[in-house]
Each structure stands twice: as structure tokens, then as C-alpha cells.
Length: 102
Length: 102
Image (cartoon, rainbow over all chains, first blue to last red; front, side, top):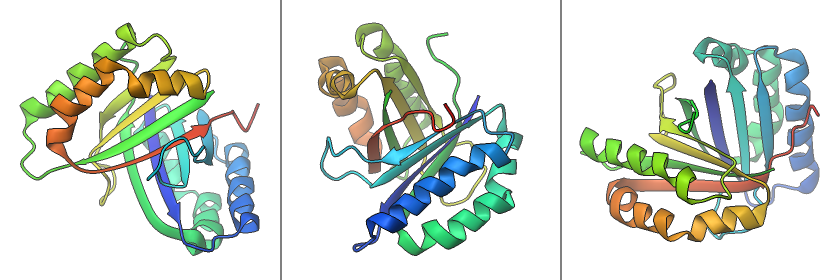
């Protein structure tokens, strides 16, 4: 399994409506990008200080499936129109996420 | 499901042996921390420029399960002895990771 992880820190003043529009946009992607196997995103729960604000974890069969997602027009549009305007910082990793206990 | 995501950037000069010791240490944790439901970690695959170097994603039934992991002595020892010496930057998010398509 190939996993994409991205964490966002929003700008000061990112409003709730704009953040809800990000979630709504993400929610729609698995219906239009058929290489997505599992897709879980959400706002930081506030358990620890110093965290970033938002996480997206997307699972694919392989790297090629991730690249389809990365470059898909619906994804690029969501990034350009809803995520980029809120973005202060972004960090990401893609990795081969085999189960170490298997 | 409650998900913990952490991304690391290693210091320049972090050697392969030290990085392998991190992976070995992570691999041992699910055997000793019984609140871990799924645990997937690995080095960035090199698909994109500008990424961090390493990801750990850990899934729990709930926030309390995560806190057991966070504070477990075996986890704290791994952080102190093997991760901290390699660490240039660290970003994290914990979030309620329900399946949006369910």
C-alpha cells in the first residue's frame, strides 16, 4: 500500500466557512478519483500544543495510483481554489506503508 | 478511529544505520503498546521534491488510546534515544479519522 500524508497549517484568520469548504471539497474526491483506496482527513483534535491544523492521509495500491490523485484536475482545482488561500505551511511525505506486524 | 500523524525531517548527516535503528524501534512498539490498532511508518519515497524525510501514522480506537501510546515508556525511550538525535524538524496532527465515504 502506498500512502500520501500531508499536514497543513492555516493562516491566521482562516475562517470556519473556508475551512468547511476544504472539508467538503476533500469529501467529494473519492467519488471522482478512482485510485483512492482510503481517504481520511480532519482538523487537529487539540490534544497537543504546537501541532499543525489539518491532516489528509490518502491510501493507494501503488505510487502510480497516488500520481493519478496528485495530478487529477478535481484535486488541483480544490488546492488552487480552497486550500492555497488558507495555507501558511504545508509538509508532506509519500511512503510505502506496509504493515510491520503482518 | 483516532489517528496520529507525525512527519520528521532529519538532520544533514543522519546516517543509514541510525535511520534503520529508528525503523527497528518503531517496528517493536505494536507488540508492547496494546492500544495501537494500525501502525505504518516509512521513509519518503522520493516522488516529490520538498518533502519531509519520514512518516509515522498510528491508529487507535479513541483519543485515550493515543495518549497511552504517546506517554508509553517504550515510546518515550525510542524518541529520546533514537529519534531526537536525528531530528531537524517535526510536525504532527492528531484527528478523528472517520471514513468520509462510509
